[in-house]
Image (cartoon, rainbow, N blue to C red; front, side, top):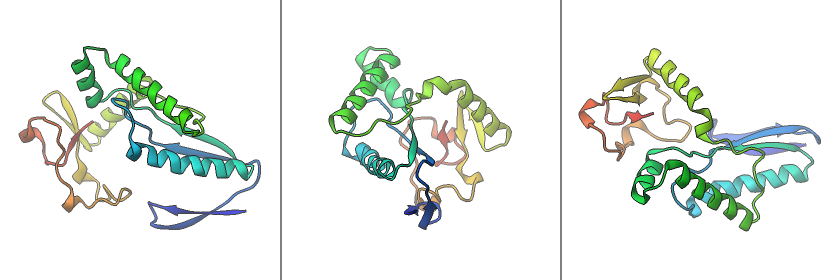
Length: 183
């Protein structure tokens, strides 16, 4: 059977040839757990839940992975504000997120990897970006050079000329470009 999906990357419909019993891998970027989710956070989860259920109905096995970003500037700010550890904050909001999935009868992913379980791999990847001059160190931070990749923003349909600098407070003069961001 064929399943037609829209490809954000290709900007067109693509067809998947599916056979009953086949396994499909799905990845969805999950929440950054510094607060309760809102409908904007839940929208992609609901869309992928519908796809997940459709595939199961068609007897397609689904390996569905959704990450949990459990360390981030927003989590650190919340932890400092509440005088708690980042882990306590992220655990609290991760549990609240999972409770909401259950409450709204959303199928749980096969795996929910936490970013903190992959810090060493992330650091290695960032170091490789610095070596390739895709990122650079400045004032004890590593920043991503968005101008290096002419296709930056293509997948998310963002036009570099229309992008506005981020709101994170760092020494703006230390950035090569106002659009560069901290990794």
